[in-house]
Image 1 (tube, rainbow, N blue to C red):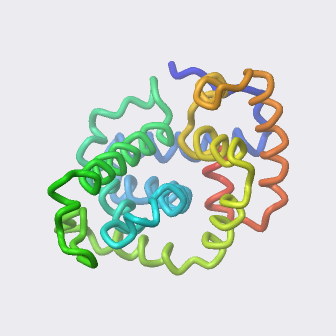
Image 2: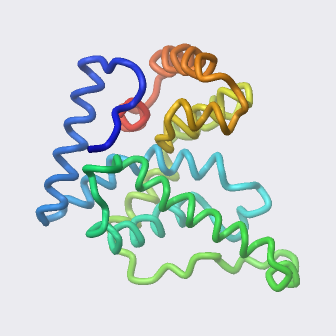
Length: 215
């Protein structure tokens, strides 16, 4: 069984987790459209993560919508191998997203890519046969004003809080893993998350984003 997250979960958190687990179970059983429903639930947080993570110098070749669509395609192909008993869906899907972003960063940094004429708009991801529902989701998210405001709020956080939100709140790393990445004590990370979590709940966030962060 997968290890529980640190800290006691509130009733609200348990309900959020139960909804996700039910959607994962339905998708595993092959219910019509069940994977799409599951993915749409995490897509707003994934889009915001990409919007923060994608560097400015990459924007001509990769935007958050591209990443959201590519992750959907890869995750759907790999979903049969996903084991919800050992890994949470959120951790798994963000691992897919991190792989996509790392591949893009390596490509942009390669000598061959750097040799291209300045100003080229060649897309990094050759997206083909993407279902209309996925394209629609990414387009909707790109126009979501509240997501843009949330991105701006995150970018104004102190670096350690911003990385804590990205690594733990979105990517699903444990407090211990985040502590090692940020070179902080475990107690310090736990207390920081408690304070940050309280601030998150005070933000006028779309419920779909808040649910993903507190899942």
